[in-house]
Amino acid sequence: MEVLVLVAIFLVIVVAVVVPSSKKGKRKCPRCTEWVKSEALKCRFCGFDFPASAPLPLRSDARKS
Ligand SMILES: [Zn+2]
Image (cartoon, rainbow, N blue to C red):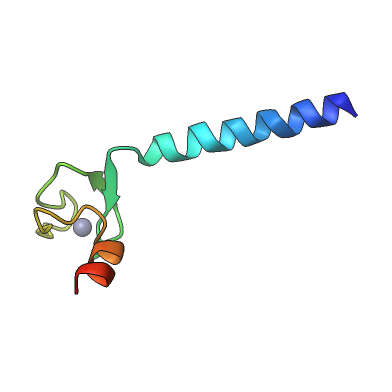
């Protein structure tokens, strides 16, 4: 039992740490769906211009508008 609990906790920690960190400081380009730096104003893949103050367009648009 203890081993299973430890394995479960370990997996949760791995998922919680590894998965978000791979996307940390990045945002998804709405046009080409590639991950670019959150500081970027233009997508380096397709040239899409990001709105300067909208790191997460899906959420901020739903609330502000
Ligand atoms: Zn793009």
